[in-house]
Amino acid sequence: MGEISRRAFLSTATATGSVLWAGGWAVRPWAAAQEAGWPRLPPVKIHVVYVGTGGAWPTPTFDAPAEVAKFKNYLAGVETRLGDIKFVGGELIPNTTAAAVEVSGRLKDADAVLLVHLSFGSGEPLKRLVEVGLPAAIFSQPFSGHDWMYVPRWQKAGKKVIMATSSDYRELERAAALLRVPVRMRQSRILVVGGPRGTAPACSAEQVQRVLGSELVPVSPERVSAAHQAVDPQAAEAEADQYWIGQATKIVEPSRADIINSARLYLALKDLMIRERAQAITSSHCMSQPAKGCLAFSKLNDLGLVGACEGDMDSTLTMLIFAYAFGVPGFISDPLFDTARNAVIHAHCTSTTKLDGPQGPRAPFLIRTQCDSNQGVSLEVQMRVGQEITCAKLVNLDTMLISTGKIVELTDFHDRGCRTQITTEVSNARDMARRWGSDLEGDMMTLLHRVVFYGNRVESMRDLAVLLGLKVVEEG
Image 1 (tube, rainbow, N blue to C red):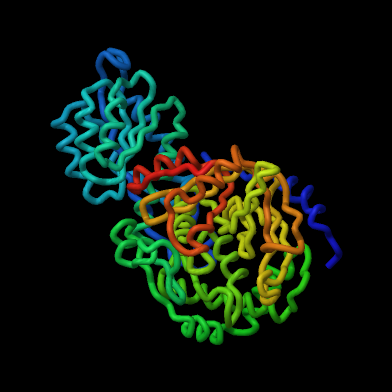
Image 2: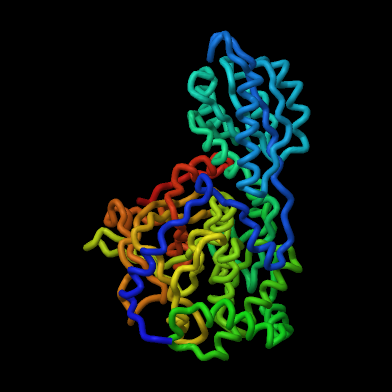
């Protein structure tokens, strides 16, 4: 392949442009994984209740059935676009406590509840439906009434309910996308190779299952090696040629045999994950034999699944949450500060190539060695200059650390640091460095790692935090 400089990628990466999903949410998030052989998860059932049949607000002549018909038509489109939810119910009830109590008995088979507030009331019917205990969202148009004002106090009391007070129906799509997340986390199985690393709560299988509902499945390195040996060499060669060698802009250090060996590891992990019905995998042995995990994890993230390096459980859970909500993969990074430029540099050797999500384009990439050892196979991925990003990490199962930035260049430190590098402009780098990690404790990886995602997700993460029972701490 011909020579190409790192700077020359800038025009290519920028020209790719951003991919806009419907409403910015995960559209058919499992399509690519299902095509690759992963089993389909059941659709998330969201029970819809329309509350209020009329009165002084919005108007004495309010036609509630006609309004419901408009909402149902829009929600049918949401169901199609998101692809993994099913709206059920659809009852129109008067704004009375008795009606709410009666319909609440029908919610037992649902995963979540969407309440569309149509007309003025006391707030009590909405509260009764929220108290069923399912993840809940309330949509209230202007002039529907003032029942929205009770929601903040319900949230302070620990109710897992979010609110959208808007004239924009797309907020219904946002609500449905976020309601999926607690449900999907309870359905998730995570393979943990060689033991977990990170904060103590995240490394406890019992606490993860109690707080988020996800199951950690231990896998020995020996089992991975055996699965690697069982892969057909010809299948590994075809995978390497089709997905990596044939699409790379340049191969720098690794040999063809090294790339095939890494592709073989992907096929081995794929087989293990499908057998175990897993949506994520992390390994504390990812830089050892039978191959470094960089290419394997990159492909898994390209498919909308999660492959996380260094056994980092906090980052693994963060990546799952973002994948379910927004359909975007994460880039685990070792951040560095450059206060001279008011910037944070993000660098690592494992990166997805489909940063917009599985339905988006692949970013240009070079095939490189893993930089710490100058062995194995990793990627130098050229992310999109000008792209706004969210940097996040769930820690201790109770706090989401979060910040935003904008990619301003592909960092030009060829001779140092990890292979994939981006420089992100932030609001105040000095202040961010001073407040880094809040009261986080742990080893270097635990303190350092953050996960980078395309897009500004802060406001939606605030709502997700309510649904998941988390605190949000802005780092910058």
